[in-house]
Image (cartoon, rainbow, N blue to C red):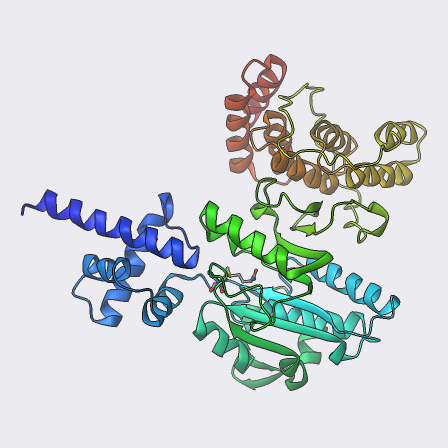
Length: 443
Ligand SMILES: C[S@@+](CC[C@H](N)C(=O)[O-])C[C@H]1O[C@@H](n2cnc3c(N)ncnc32)[C@H](O)[C@@H]1O
C-alpha cells in the first residue's frame, strides 16, 4: 500500500470514529475541530497503548460501546473550561425562582440541575448565590444535581478544591465567605455547600434520562450552558427534547446565548439577556412574570446613527403562537415617550415590547435600531442577538452588530461583520451602501 492509500485509510478510520463518537456522546468533530480530534486521538492512543491514531480510531469505531470507550472519550475529548459565577445573569434567574417558590408556599424543594457541570464551579455558584441572596430559603429546600460525562471532572468537583483561576469572576466577599485556603493558591469550598450538591455521571447524549433513577424528573431550572455548542445537530435536538421532558411546566432551561436557535428550542418561550438565553417550558408567554431584564448600561457613548435600512426581512422561522394575545403597540408608545423626553419610561416600554413578542422579527429589528439610535448599547446588543437568533442571515443584524463591536473597540470583528453584512445584503442597496461606507472608514 502506498502513502496516499494509507493516508486515505487513516482518514476513513477517523471519519468512522468521529461518527461513532458523535452518536454516543453528542460531541461533534467536524470542520475546524477535526484537527483537535486527531490530536486527542494521538493522546488517547499513547495512553491506552494503541499503536497509532488509526488503530485507536478503529477501536472507537468498532465493537460494542462499552465503559472503556465511553471513559476514553470523556477523558480525552471533553473541554473543561469553566469558572465560578460565569454568565451571572443566570444566577439571578435561579434566585428569582427560589423567591417565587417560597412565596407560593411550596413544600417541596426547588429542583435545580447543572447538566454538563464540569469541575463543579457552576453548581457551587448556584448554591452560593442562593445562600447569599435568598437566605430565607433553608438549604434543604434547594436540591442541586450536577452531572457530567467526565468522571475525573466529577471527582475534582466532589473534592471542591480550586485554584485562583477558577475565581476570575468572583466577588472577593464570596471568595472569603465560602472558601478557605488549603495551601499555596488553592481554596476549599465550605463543606456545607459541598454537601448541598449531588454529583453524578450522566451522558446527556444517552437515554438514561428523564428517569427517576437518574433523579432528573420535575426540574425547576436546568443549566446546560456551553455544552450543546459541542454537539452535532441531531444530538443537540434530542438532548433539548429530553431536557424539556425533565422540566416541570413553567420550568426554565438556561443555555449560553450562542447556543440558542429557534429550531432547537421550538417547544420553549425564549427570554434573552446579554450573556444567556433562558427558555421557559410553557405555551403562554407571560411577560409580567419574567425575571427583570438586565439594566442597560448608563451613559454609553452613542454610536453613529444606524441607517434607516429596511433590512432583509425574512419570514420569521419560528412560528408565532396562535394563542398569543394581541398586544398594544408598545413600540410606538416607546417612541412617543422618548420624543416627550421620558427616556427611562421609553426604555422600560421598549423592554416590555420585546419581551411581549420575542419571536417577532420586525419588532426585534425596530427595537434594536431604536436602542442603538438612542445610545443604549446594552439593550441594542440584546436586540441584535434576538434578531440574529430569529434570522441568522439578517444583513441588518450583522450591520448593527458591527456598529456595536466598533463602538466597543473591537475593530477586527466589526470589519468581519460588515463584510458579512455586504454579502447578505443582496438587493438591499441602502444597507449595502451603508456597510461599504462604514468599511471605508474603518480600513
Ligand atoms: C465547557 S464545559 C461547560 C461547563 C459549565 N456548564 C459552564 O458553562 O461553565 C462543557 C462540559 O460538558 C461536558 N460534556 C460534554 N459532553 C457531554 C455529554 N455527552 N454528557 C454530559 N456532559 C458532557 C464536558 O465534560 C464539560 O465538562
